[in-house]
Structures are given as structure tokens and as C-alpha cells.
Image (cartoon, rainbow, N blue to C red):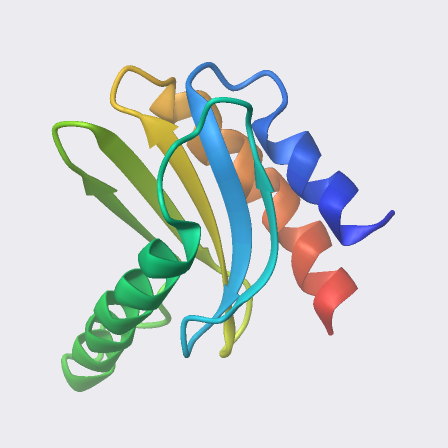
Amino acid sequence: MPLKDMLSDVIAGVEGALSVMVMASDGVAVAEVTADGAAFDLQLISVEYATVLKEIRRTVEVIHAGELEEVCVTTDRLRAIMRALNDELFAVLILSREGNIGMGRHRLHLKSFELARELT
């Protein structure tokens, strides 16, 4: 299945899903799918969250807490769920604040295995 189709499957049926992307650890978006009406700069989000993820991953290593799997950032307008696919790639699901975070996490988790296989 093409990468964009897999990403479309992630946001299908998730209330409030605005965008999903695969990004490299340096912040470069590999692929992205955006719902109609989503008005934000995905490139800026990917670069900034890549910096955050790099620091979190470093901290996890320093404290010997295991492998980083998922990070969720919630603001008063958006939620971002970032899931590691491998050492270099992350899947990021952006939801509206009112979006269904539980379903978003579930769908991203399920698709992350397929995405990781496709990207290796």
C-alpha cells in the first residue's frame, strides 16, 4: 500500500484529525496527509517537534528508561501524538483540541508497525 494511503488510513474515522505525517529526526517531512480546513504550517511543526523529540530521546537514554515509543503534546488548540517508527523516523498525528485522542493514539499505534515496515 502506498505511504500516503497508509497515512490517510490513520486519520480516517478519527474525529478532529487534522494531519498526519512521517518525519525524519532532523525535522524533514517524508510524507504527509492533511484534512480539509487544516490551517497551520506543517513544515514548522515538524522542525520544532523534531527538536523536542531529540531532547526527549536523549533524556530517555541518559536515565536508562528504555526506547522512546510515544510522546503527546497538548496545547489549548492542538494535540500532537508522535510515535517512533525506528531510530530515524516518527509518525506525527495532529488533532484539534476537541479531537478523539484515544482513537487517534490507537490508530497511529496500529499503523505504526505497517509504516515502519514500509519505510525500511
